[in-house]
Image 1 (tube, rainbow, N blue to C red):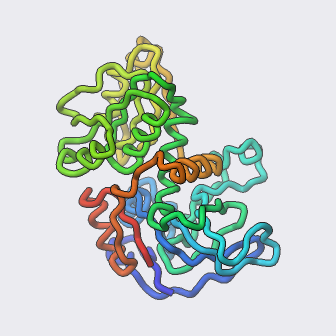
Image 2: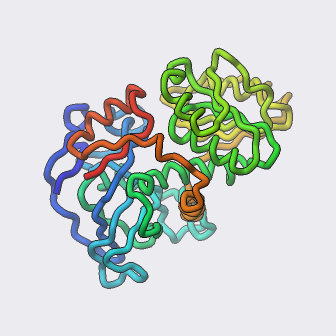
Length: 332
């Protein structure tokens, strides 16, 4: 089968190539991949950025995928050929105290499909049935591939951020997760402003504005003093703004990943009595929530997705790294 495989630590060693079709192990299901999204983690792994040294080649990338079941191991209960599913990407051991509490993304032995082991940027992928989430038979595959990042946004906005109706919310970062956080906060009844970099004024902010989201650039400073700030950009200046501008007693939810250390004036946290929490990945209930929201038409994200063929996956990585595409979705 064809797959996007990272075979070494230089950019040129990540390419679309032939690899064996996965053989099923105990409790596993084989999916024919319908579509798979690319995200920032794939870019970091492709470039072998600091903090991603644990991604060891050879590995097939891709953790944001949707597919159709084509084979089921005998001990996999509840799944049949023809079922459609997405996979929970951050996978805990399901045995430790954190996993048993439902916080599988906090498991000390967690693995990430497409980074720790072969993922969905391929024609077929095997997944433990414990980490499959059913999707409707009529959901467009390209949209279904966006369920994973949407679940990350839901976890940050609702579970960690605790957004409430009537609150003033600022979301920094005009990437797909940032826009999704804004949409979910608006759905909850919040007054939301999405903040992008100057370069985002060309395409990303207009794409968000077309969905009814209020937008501004960092230079405009039109976000006021929000009750909740969701930092989804991974940019240190945005995090600095969050600490300086969030209203006293407000909350800061950090979901972006940072390529360098951030220096923060902690006096702002003390004087503002700010609550600061990180938000990492998502859990099964977040997936189920956004699938329901998509079915109800509450997350109109289709216009944000750009489709590429699998053979063009490296080009899609390059364009995503240069912010030339908002959300690339690869179709095998």
